[in-house]
Image (cartoon, rainbow, N blue to C red):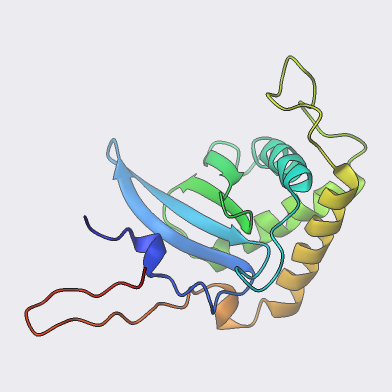
Length: 174
């Protein structure tokens, strides 16, 4: 099997930021998957699960209600490794072009009084939320984006170099 592109990213060198994961054509329309990394993989603790869940609800609600972007949003959800989120948007923009949107979304968490959809009828794990920690992670990430918006590593994934044998076989670490 081919190694999927996200596994060719050097996870030992990733910093928080916004990165293009993949660009696809679906039904004739271009869509882009962005990796929105809140923490450094394997160097910082994973985002607390309850906080991650709350951020999923809060940021998804913001994105799907933003008047300029709501029709562009296809998906917002957590990464399994709990280092960030996937955002899928219609079109193909550079990460810098959506930085302001994400900055506003994460800043909006500060003023939240409750987590939208955190009821038994609306959420499959409605008791697993932590608004206080979600606010902390959101502020931390927003501050990071502001402080590092001029650094290329905030918007470009480090790629791993893979050994290719003489007969064209790719060597992948396991």
